[in-house]
Every structure is written in C-alpha cells, then in structure tokens.
Image (tube, rainbow, N blue to C red):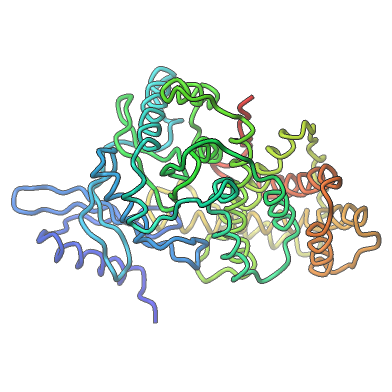
Length: 447
C-alpha cells in the first residue's frame, strides 16, 4: 500500500534530519502536480533553506530516472555552472535534496524590460557555456553520444517513441502523423555533439541575473540547436521575452550562425515529446492525476508542433469558428457542480491547489457536455475526407485514421497538418477557461 501524503511528507522530514544531522522546522508541499517540498532545517546556529525534488515516476510520462538528473547536477556544479548545491539522494520516497536557491521562476514577473533583457542575456551566456563543456564527464555518467547525423537530428526522440509504444493503450493519429514526419525530415547538422538541457529556459533569477539553472531531468548529448528549440516550448508556459533577440544574443556569444530551420525541426520534435509521453496517462489516468493539466499540455504542445511544421512549409493556418453549444437535460447538473467547486482564491498551498484542480475538472466536464457533440461531429466529417465513410465509434475512427496517416505519402502532409491543427484548436477552445498559464499562448517564430 502506498503511503499517504502526510506519511510521505513525514518520511521526507525524517530522512532530511538523519542525512543532515539537522532539525526540520518548516516543511511545505509545493502547490503543483509533482511531489516536492520546501523545507527549512536548523543545524546548530546554521539555517538551511532546502528543496526536495520528488520523483515524477516513469508512470507519469517520464523516460529518465531521477538519478540521471542528480548526476547531471553534480557534473554541472563541479564545472562552475550555477545549479543548486546537492545534499543527497533519497531512496524512499525517491527525491533529490538540494539547496533552495534565492530567486524566482517565470521571467514574465521581471520588474521591467531592462531586467527581463538582463536576465535573458545572462541565461544565454550560461547556455553557451553549458554547450562548450567537455562531454566526457557526461558520457562517463551514462549519457550517449549520437553516433550519426540521423541520431544527432532525432536526439532522444527514439527514447520517447519506445516509451510510448510500451504504454500505448489506444490509437492516436496525430502522434502517428508527427512521428512519421519527424523520421522523414531528419536534418543534417554540422554542430559537434554537446551537452544540452533539452527542456531549456528553466531557471531562477534575482536582480537581473540568473541565480540557478534548474529542472534538468531531460538533458542529453545532442545538437545545441535543441536548446534554442526548448526555449520556444518553455515560453508557452513561462514567457521568456523576445526569443529572436535571445537567439541573436546566443549567436553573438558563440560566434556561430543560427539555422532557423534546424531549430524549427527540433521545436517540432521536442513539442511532440510531451503529448507522446502523456497520451497513455490521458487514456488511463492513475488515481490522483491532474487530468486537466495533462490535457492542456497535450493539446497546446501538439498545436505548437503543427504550427511550426506549417511555418516550415509556408502554410497559412486558420483557426476554426467558435464551437456550437448544445445544452441537454443533464447540463444543469454540470453547471451546479462547476459552480459549487469554484475556489474563492488562487492556489497558495497544496490543499488549495487540489481544490483548484477539482474546480478545473468540473468546469471542463461542463464544457464537454455542451460542446462535445459539435466537436465529435466536426471531427467525423473531416476524417471522412481522408477515409471516405467513417465509423460512428470514435475509437474505430481513430484507429483507421492512425493507419492512414502512418502509410500516407508526403503529398498529403499539408492537408493533414491543416486537419490536425483544426482538431487541436477545437480542443484548445474547449479547455480555454481552465488553461491558466497556457491560455491564448502561441509559439514564437524565429524568422
């Protein structure tokens, strides 16, 4: 039997105290989907601000063990990169104990344009320094060097593809299409393999400077262009400012030109990794899953991938019209549920976060009740353009469409990009009021 949240927190406290020989005087679970705690411990006269980064677990869509990130943080710290100092690795509950670095995340909270640009410049300098590191220590820590131009282009996409194949529980034509496109359009890069953060753009900052680079669980050895792509996907949830300015700054620091199309390809690749990782969770959510957060990630990052694909081909995309609402005899109950769970304040602690999670789910279900039939009708009519007559059952329809796109030739790509984009936009509309930081976001183009 799994421990309760309170039992898990007590395990964290006990381990921290035993490991550091200190007394924990404060412990608060972070208000987010992933298990993590802010702690303060006292050791004699010393006061230790700490952060315990819990394990998301492979069942939550990850494909890298937490030890992977621990080893990387150690190497980067020894190389002089500003990362949190490590205090140890806990086996139960699994997690990394590190210092709590001063500063805040999310560059949109910068005081003004001057501070935002200063932090952006500082991060691009650090990113260039990271890319210049000797990769030998990372190889010794278990990271693999790409063995060919194709491996360099695909980066760690095969890792995610294999993970999806192991856990797929239902057909997904969109993922099948983008996966085929990625394998058919692998770029050739002249860059030397470098250590890359992958999910780049994550850092803490204070007074115009980066205080720590954080969240390196997806890091690997690959093309530096992958990190410029990662900035674009991170910008969707944590705005990073003008990314054309950022990439120009990176080019000035490294004295290397930027190939926008190479960055575009890696943007498509990294954008679709999120839907690929979480599609099985959405299909069969484990208990306690923040399903709305996962749905938002799926549809927003899938849309981003399609929009960059369209940009690469010069395709002008159009957003579908507002979805028709169709109230029915059950709609009033959904309305009451959504209103009764509407929180009175934003999430400030984990209990409030859980209440907000339930409220978002209720509002989503209310909107599905009103708009779901119109979405399904539009989807069936548009799929029929590719397949002819289609089954009423959406699962059978998706299976046939998945087979179609996997076998289709590149001359159907434009039609499929337009179709899947319309599909993602309809679900974007459906989720819009509960999307929080992802609402109304669009991926930045670099040219």
